[in-house]
Image 1 (cartoon, rainbow, N blue to C red):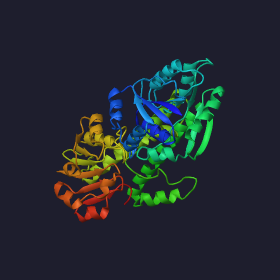
Image 2: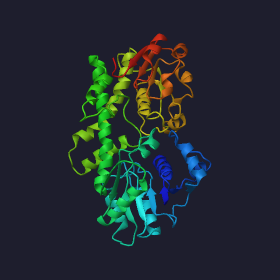
Image 3: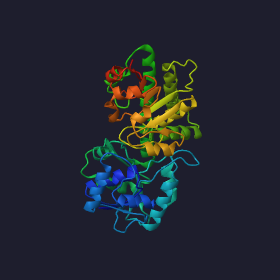
Image 4: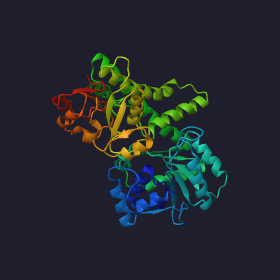
Amino acid sequence: MHLFLIGAGHVGLVTAVGLARLGHRVTVADIDGPRIEGLRAGVAPVYEPGLEDALRAGAAAGSIEYTTDLTSPPTASHSIVAVSTPTGPDGPLSTANVETVVAGLLAATDASHTIVVRSTLPVDGPGRLRALRGDGRDRAAIVTNPEFMREGTALRDFERPDRLIVGWLDERDQPAAEAVLRLYDGIEAKTLVADASSVAMIKLATNVFLATKVAYANELARICDVVGADVDTVADGIGLDPRIGRAFLTAGPGYGGSCLPEQAIALSLITAARDIPTPLIAAVSRSNETHQRAIVSRLAALLGDGDGSLRGCRVALLGLAFKANTDDVRESPALSLAEYLRAAGATVVGTDPRAVAKAHRADPELETATSVADAVEGADAVLIATEWSEYRDLDWADLAPRMRGDLVYDTRDVAPADAVRAAGLRYVSLGRG
């Protein structure tokens, strides 16, 4: 099939590659002219392992092409909307971009066409789309098809998803929703077709639950630091219970990215606006912020300043992306830590294998370095905030003499403790004794 996809961001480009690999021809559209020109030249605007090579292969095979024209080609059977739902005047998950694109598609297509909204919607998103279409029976069907891909493993997640879920706005859209599953022929996964309001809740509730597991693991880590337990062993034991599972119970500096933080806040605001008491959901974001502040407080205690101040201290922050294998710094816990460190009086120098430029744009006050060696020069402490594999193989014997202090505080359990200590440095790992 010929598919028209609007939105050349992370979700849109991974979706385009995945669908092209399934045998479809995909035209990717975006209003960002330089982004489209870059894609035509084989340059991806985001880093995702394997994505740029896959886009080039698709372009060479003629299965992926690019345009700045948002008008669906007459040969396209489906238009897929993968534009952002950022924070707007009404809070997180603004549907303004989605509504603009869908309105244009409705005006340019007819009932033979299907509009597939892959963008994450708030709980009232389906209602907004329903009102946008109105009662016109001669207009395109609108269905929702949220993605469940993780940055860093997105291509694999597309090809081997846990589930494929499609939602219909009205019952007359149900056949179109069921037909969307056929776009994924060749992928084995559990499927669900349901009303779009339930599907929107599935997407939001999934991510908020995952954020809750991360927040819980981080609170356990702080307890383990005090009582002398090992948080990994504790999480392993908890994860043996099939009702709970081990996934997302790994302690770290907090959750980040474009999904979990935004959607945890969004669901909390939605329930508050409708006077629905949800104290557990409301606590998730507060727990994440509390955890990051606690990391900074512990760093100050480890450096021996009893008043919690870091005045005069220089901290090398290793990792700026919210997780490894991406250059995404949106809601990155590393950038939150940098802000709290500076508020405590520290000078912060950050580095990252991929995300230095984006981090500096997101936080112009952040001093950055292009290498770990430059970042640790004169540092009183090293704080590891992202689990890049590169940080497993650092030459600590070379780095130690560059530092003014001797503390390595590893929130990701990525650095080899023995190698750090052999270099004469103090190694402390979050929640691990």
